Image (cartoon, rainbow over all chains, first blue to last red; front, side, top):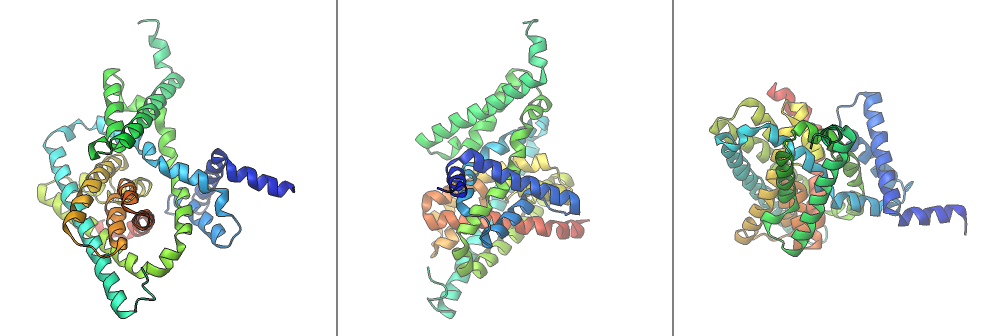
Length: 137
Length: 237
């Protein structure tokens, strides 16, 4: 068994190591943003870098699949501390809070409705014009 | 109690305490939701409430709390990178359906911005709140970035994003029950564009295609918004 093969197998198994690899892409993205003064978050640049390497087959999807799944599955945990900012905004407990809630509820319903109808109409249109083959499923 | 005071004030102790409280409640909330999947038991809704109760009971401030848990928020960076994997794995879906998905994402984003703007102006919210509300449909790492770019308060946007996620998972179900949608594409896109991560979790329960579409659309709509934010900022400024 070659060392390369053994290393690959080791990485494919360890979710923690894979999280480390994903984080390395994030750091590389942050470094790019700093160096080039890009108006983008480091994570987005890291995502683009990784996508390019995946698409050109320089990186195997299995070297980060488990780690990425673990990160995405628990992503909601990472927002929790940010949400607690509401403790510094007691004014939200009153009328302002209700107004904000109203805006969020109505706007979210509108966004979902428009998105679903736009996608469905477009899908049906393609189905009838481009034919069943191109718009399969 | 007086002997404990210096220990409790120690930053390392604070960091350990608040991280343990946050992760512990999150883990418990997840188990609870797996057992009873009701919308008001979503970990996204339950965890912040429980953590807030502990913070208030211990007479701590948000400042103390966030100093100890900032590292969790930083992990949103690697989480953003992690989206590369599902995007890559769904490349076939993108190749087949990109025009349809693009139309849905643009329509949804424009509706989000326009309706938030109009409604916030209608009920008379101040300008900073209005700007912080604009990016709330997209996933947090993107939303906080956009919020800062256009002159909102990223912390407030994070709160609005969470409320949107919870509301969206419920509203999405109500829409599905009333509007006949032909394609799994539409059922997934509605959750991905409207309610980011929380919606994607719901879409995964509907079916494999719905879940994949929701996850994909959530990322792409986030990217689209980050790229458009400088333009929107110029229009607003």
